[in-house]
Image 1 (cartoon, rainbow, N blue to C red):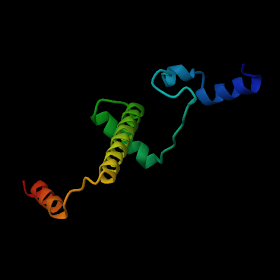
Image 2 (cartoon, rainbow, N blue to C red):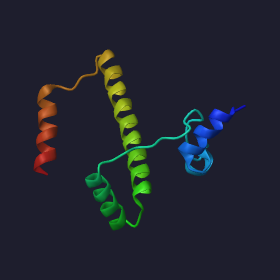
Image 3 (spheres, one colour):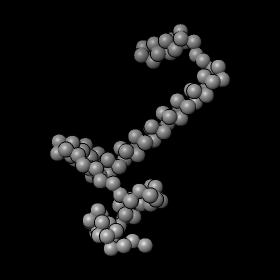
Amino acid sequence: MVNSEGRRLRQLCWRGRTPESVLPLSRFSRTLKGMEVHFSPDVETQLERVASANGKDAEQLVKDTVVRMLENQARFIAGVQRGIEQADRGEFVDHRDVVGRIDRLFHS
């Protein structure tokens, strides 16, 4: 149950919108009620420019970018964990092999 102060705060934060209309709860944490991020005017201009060039609005560009960043972070953490587990099992790559792989990447 939300008291009158809670209702007033929700009205101020959401400007008449419901949290569900802004953040579909099925895709986000149920404890996340809303978030507001402030950018400098220069960054806002850049976001608008990039979004427009990609056929999106700035809000959607930011949402898409954050989702990609979180997915990349999760993949990175999973990769590091796999590496730690391999090291714990004694599965290492010789230094010369690593250097050879890097050289092939840059010279191919």
